[in-house]
Length: 290
Ligand code: GLN
Image (tube, rainbow, N blue to C red; front, top):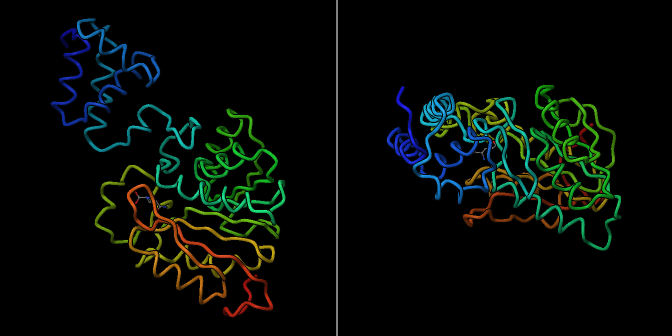
């Protein structure tokens, strides 16, 4: 392989179909430089890349061109100001999920919430939501659950890296947690089994993405079971698909939640819905889930 300059390597990557920004971030990564060093690239157009570095860059560019998320290739993703380690064991945290964190923090700031409120994050994956909440409000008592031991290993490593004390529990949704919580949050799988977007997500764990024919299976289960794990007046806040807000709000209402509402993501799409549990006596939902 020819020895290339930085500028030539970037051009070659773009010819493979990479966005310029992705190419720059990958090049910085193989050079061992942080993503914030793009100014360095601008002033080093004519710098030659060591052959091995050039080859590594070419390999990663090909993988990016084949659709692998940039975060897996560079091994990390920024979420709510935290640099999280990610790999193919976990879904890549999305900026849209910061909407859920913002909303959760607003609820936690309300007068009736103790500083040490008990918070549960279901399906934590890389730990993104749980760690962002704990980082923002260190007195919180945060529990994070995932069915995947592999995902929990990633989340736990992130917690240690950022020195955030979160309790991690392996289990299927509420299976191994003890009630009650002041706030329950989740970004569960919500993509329909036959969704046409799935091929574009093929590098991420399917288990973290799909949830039945209409994508609502897990949202339904969480909404059904959550009241048994919520304090009276506690909140359940859920992320869902771009076209699921109405269906999810209906599920909340049918289960007997109050103040059911949605929040929009950065694109203005209602992306999270939630409600307050008024207490069993007022609940009009189906039978209490155990
Ligand atoms: N937001 C993701 C996507 O559609 C899906 C995440 C999820 O299923 N929770 O790319």
